[in-house]
Length: 483
Image 1 (cartoon, rainbow, N blue to C red):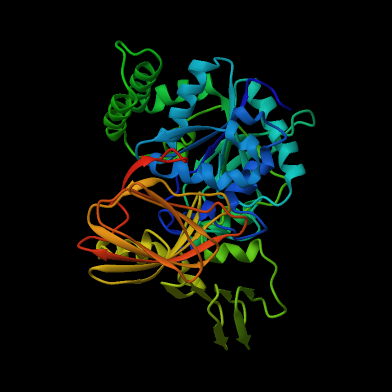
Image 2 (image 1 turned 180 degrees about the horizontal axis):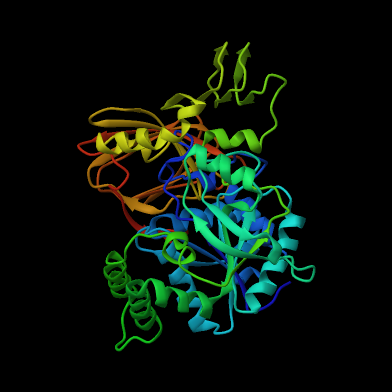
């Protein structure tokens, strides 16, 4: 469509608890390659890439995730650099995220229409999705709030529901009038919704004019609206010149006061004159491990097996593994997910409770909820092989032509042993190469840099030693990636 006033706003501030242990706080669900050849986020971007102008795709996420998302999308091509980011100081649910995006867009483009899309949904049929999206945009142009409803095929208790007036559809529009939004029901109520026929699952996908949603926020969430006005004025009409740091701190202060509330509960359940597109596309919000039953092909026994697995006699189970072999025998309705540092085993019936595990890890101050042993970086990745009270051992891989920042560590020294490739090392005033089976030493508080000028990946083993060996002991002086 490529309409200059039409914008796609993708919500990508997830925290990573739903698909633990595969997802982590620093690598949440939308970054995972769960179904298909790309991550859910990349699939979302590709789905809309021919419909919206690249610069009209805006991603709302938190400050700590924005850079990783940008690096993650680079694999789709240089056009992704045109995508714009709205950075929340802290996640505050969907109403503040949508409101902030609407306020920015409406200030810059007063006639704008915004399509709101979660970054972590699975929609395998792009053509049908875009057809329905065009229908929703027509409704939004007529000053309606428009949502997408999914026809239920089971009594699902994990989704909110939309009740529609089924006789409201016309041959011209195909849109249905919404009577009411409902929160997630119990099983008995969900069965009644299914048999009634006028209830749809709430997909969480919306289309509306920015002016329209802001007027609805002003009406139903006046405190949020006033704060958004303050943020907008501070960003676009500052009373005095401010530097970036001061602006960030001011926005953070204002944002901290906002109530955490969903757009569904805060606005949609209270608004009138809402239309719904009865979606023609397949959809899943991939809300828990059991949601994979709807989107991944199963074997003849109803199992989903992914990774290095061997199964004997299991039925209707989900088994994910990485490099380590996972062998299962005689499981029924079970989820098994193995990663290098954590393994989940649960009945399908209780798979929604994985969040309780993540909460327990946070309460215990354990890092398994936060990061994987292998951490992706724009220059490559590193894997923590072993960690003790005064040491850490890593395997580091650098892409060809990549380099780390020029940096200092104040509490640790590092030994580097090259496994493959050739390392160009900057150490103080020295610059030299280190070849396979050779090593070098980086003392505490000495400026250094690791670089791969070759055409093959550089792999090294790094041994850190010191009073403090955490990742935040770093001072950067020069960095290609803007960190």
